[in-house]
Amino acid sequence: MSLLKIKICFFYLSFSLTFTLFFTSCKSGRNITIDKNSQHNHSGNSKKISEKYALLLDISEDQISNSELYFFIDEWYGVPYKYGGCNKKGIDCSNFTATLYKDIYHKSVSGSSSSIYKQCKVISTKDLKEGDLVFFKIEKNEVSHVGIYLHNNKFVHATTKKGVMINDLNENYYKKYFFKAGRILN
Picture 1 (tube, helix red, strand yellow):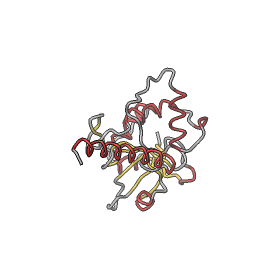
Picture 2 (cartoon, rainbow, N blue to C red):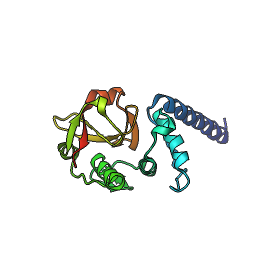
Picture 3 (cartoon, one colour):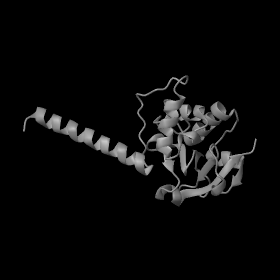
Picture 4 (cartoon, helix red, strand yellow):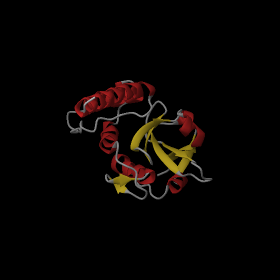
């Protein structure tokens, strides 16, 4: 087989796999893919952002009431993880949470995930609302990870492997390490 034919086969195989993973992940709520080529202009695109995230979160469009939150998520989606990072070149979970809270909710939270946990009132998972926080103890005795709850058990966070993304609290990994949910006090 010629080198050109091998390259063409590899291209079609890669395309098929990407296409399959994208549509499979949207249905399951896992490994959600965001098209980074579709950067949004906030004015006039609220409907598009509502449609996109309603589909990804498996909710109705009218449940997407805070379009600024989803524009923010869209702009940060896929930004790589960097311990101590605080910009779009790299960010960690606590700095992502602090940045989102400052820009979207105009509230100040700071410090590590454990420190942010101490700034919260603990709430039941059945009382979770968009913007509440979810905390995890991953291989430690103290809180070591934080995410922002969205809807339908989905939350956005900065992961060490894939950067900023949306996951589901019902995924085995997150069920295993979930600690508590909280609401910022101030």
